Amino acid sequence: MWRIFCGLTLALSAALAQPLAAAELRLLMFEQPGCIYCARWDAEIAPQYPLTVEGKAAPLTRLQLRDDVPGDITLSRPATFTPTFVLLNDGHESGRIEGYPGEDFFWPMLAALIRDAGPGEGAGQ
Image 1 (cartoon, rainbow, N blue to C red):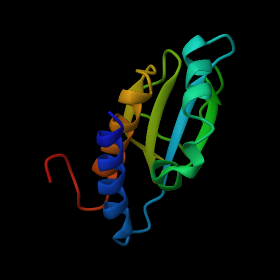
Image 2 (image 1 turned 60 degrees about the vertical axis):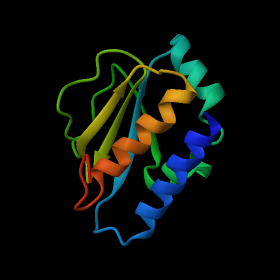
Image 3 (image 1 turned 180 degrees about the vertical axis):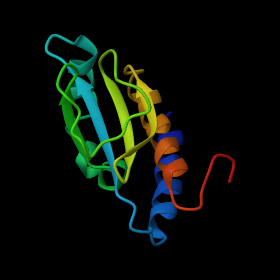
């Protein structure tokens, strides 16, 4: 699994090395107290997230599930359980991961969301 992660990271690094339009990517994490999967994400992913290619491409913003969503954010639908990860492209939802599938699946899923949100790039390109 580590080889797959490294390969995806290298591919994402190459894609991000190309100039990005003024698009700003951000990853929202909807969480709530007592969420065991949020705690698992915090233990397995959070310490390294800001150091990764993905973390640099889409910095993390945490929101409580029951709090109002800031006015500059447009979601396709509300988050209904935790954790929910929403990738924003210039404040608009471009993809989401509902739940935490474990680190072996989280990284490739996030890399695909970031790749698909890139300018002029879509699934299958």
